[in-house]
Amino acid sequence: MTTRPALSPTGPPRFVVTARVPIAYFPENSKTAIQTPVPPAVHDATTGAFIADIRLPEGVRSSWQLVAAAPDNRTFLLSGWTGPHSALRFFRVRLSEDGRPGEPELVPGFEGEGNNPGTALALSPDATRLAHAAPVLGGGAKVTVVELATGARRDWTTRAFSMVLGLAWAPDGQRLALVAGGREVSVLDTTLPGSDLLAATRLVKPRKGLHLLESVAFTPEGDALVYSANHTIERLPLHEGAAPEVLAKVTLPRDASLGLRFSLDGTGRYLLHTHGWRFHRVDLHDGSTTSMPIEVAAHPGEGMLPTAAW
Image (cartoon, rainbow, N blue to C red; front, top):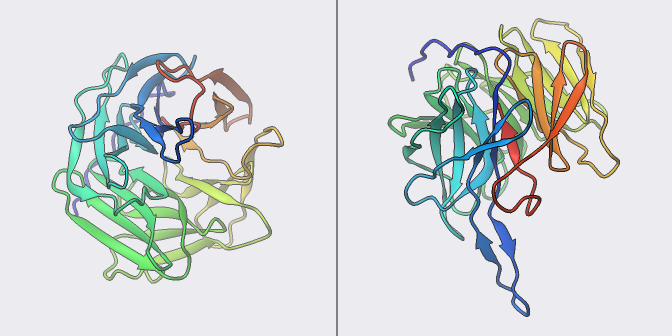
């Protein structure tokens, strides 16, 4: 698989893309849910204001809660729901300078397996490949890398753990950081031969304490990782013997999820997460947080909270 130069960051992020699962309604005296499709949406990164819905490719009925961004904050990868008990499809979309989405580009041939939506999605720095993580039937986990233009794929599997909660590409387009089982952070070298996930990865943060690790990202230089440990954001250099540095401690209500799913922008300075139908923007230079409402055109505040990327 070829590696092209990474797309350049465009400065502080201007846009956020959100993805939501279909909203399920149960009619009175019925055990069968009616699924209401919801499209992904583009928002202003400063105010949270709704800009536009993203048109879905042919055959895709609704978005799903997997979305990833390239460093330029203009190119996004989404997964789409094709119907009950049907596979997911994946598509790329590019935003104009005013945030308006172009025509979606469906990834040929590649789809999620059965009813399994997967657990993590990442778009390569040059926006030509996706990385997707999903559980394996019978136990275990799989990481798949797919060429967006052709659908050509490569898989790595393991039985050592069943969940990959976070995925992130390095700027070199060859390494993938992953959160294994919610307790360990490893780096997968995609240039190594074979399909054994453990054999191709290097452990960089071992299991320690009761912290739940969820999201991970490379710094723009590729020499360190940023990850969430419960609601604490840490930075860990990738050289031998390095110790993690706390960048920010996010304050959330007691009813918030123990983990923190975030998106790091291309500059490496700003981190985004969602809670309570609000975007929360964290400046990793000083740890300060600002928040804004998530404005949507349809079904505001209904269904599951969307996943966001910038």
